[in-house]
Image (cartoon, rainbow, N blue to C red; front, side):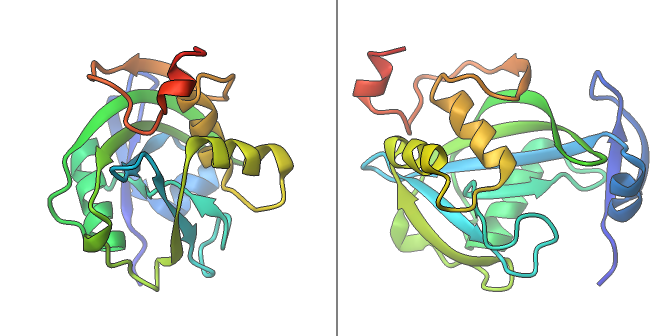
Length: 193
């Protein structure tokens, strides 16, 4: 498999070069990523269990989609590609929630956008090479999993769930985008903000 090429970006998210994913991570070059939270009509989040062959956090729980933005793609295109490749969804209606900077691990510096959208559970077909399995959780259930530490979760997923639940997180917020409401939060949680 050929190593994908990623855009290298400045602190103000301007493309300043391109490099292989391997060298981006080896040399600590800042690059782009996307995450998607897909929410069911009953306010449960589709959570993927990462594939067992993933370099980072194999078999850990993760966002519905987590992707690098390939060279020449914009954030939205990368989110759409990830939805298609990993879950077989070709026409999800997603909206940007927040743009942030985060350190994902040693030499892994990213500027990312988190998207959120509604989904129909009947239309999911996950790629077993990319995704080990999927489950559905409420925000309260995920908070409990994080608190008890009995299940492996990717570090970025933990930080995104904390941010989403209005808790202290490791996200360095660059911009929040206008949106009507957050789909994954329950009315109970909204009233305690």
